[in-house]
Length: 511
Image 1 (cartoon, rainbow, N blue to C red):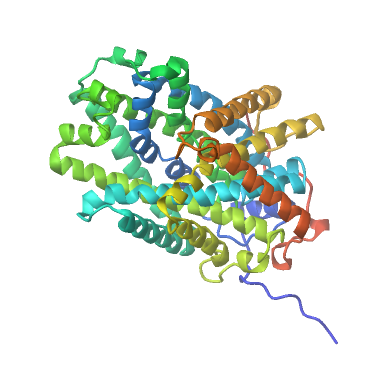
Image 2 (cartoon, rainbow, N blue to C red):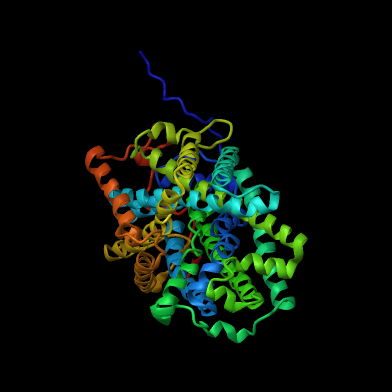
């Protein structure tokens, strides 16, 4: 009796040229090419940029930053950008050598080991799934006034669920549709941040530039330093998303070179757009005292109405809604690749269902279902519960980031010599250690200064408690299920055909 090879879910296509080199690089890392490799530098940047989304961040958090720290909160932007720049450089080096879907999980697995990577990926996966909810949940606040429907709990939930499901459909349709939608999101981001910010700066200034050097009484009994640290969360909550460029690595052409560039472009352009829009909004505030006293609780709305009029404000609302939707789409895409990467390695329950590639769309429907159903399900909980759950989102992402920074430092101590197209060279140790100091500091500030959802002990310390709950659940899963890597047959390259470290390209860039 003869046996036939196991069936594959996708008909193999013989790659040529750059595609062949990319497939060979992936094979050297142990995996067959199954996803569609169709993205260039611009599309890779677009996914990362719409995930970072300065439009979503600034419009959501401007009122908080100004009321908490006064106009001086503006200076949190360069501080956080420098810190996240160190993290980004660490990611760029790891992703250049290991351009594999599921970024953080795959990088830490190769830098340290499977158990470390499993916990890192577990924390980051839940952070992404919850972040999808946290971005989708406020959309009704902008879509309602734009489309003329009332904003209440029911419409808030319905809007969030509809957006999450529609984004799931777009993600299922394939990476080219994702790239098209992300490109449209970039246009909305530029119009809603850079163009509007410059318009406000040139034509609707009510404050002098010196205002960004003052807190104007914000902070109260907490003191100026405490108020500024709390207001720094404005920037901490915005400047991530560049890691999504690495999450979709198996769909990017020449990933070792292009992913580091796309990451740096995402942070640089996102930082510039945030500076322009934040400065424009600050100088356009008609009555700063009303915002700081709490009398004006919606300074964005006040500014848009005063500077753009009814029609212009509607256009701005349309851009904001598009920005929110494209942000949900990009985060969902990153979460899908991470779930797929976990499942392809066989280290989570339901691995086969979550890692099976659809023969037409070349996407994993099971992983997309996870990134759709769980975030949508969270929105159906009572509002107070949703508010508490999404508190974990940003700190979970920062923990995932720091797991990579720490893993890079551990790997260097063990003798790791990066060999990707992008290398930090002699600056590697300094970048890793300074990035670790920044990240730990940010996590502490998040734990202490994140606004509480109530007055009880649980609400006051919800950030570290939520971290403990998710981390503890991951430890229990490791102890009970004892997952072991078993890459599915149709995705695995025979061990003898794989090389331990391969980039498919000679190093040409270094920091």
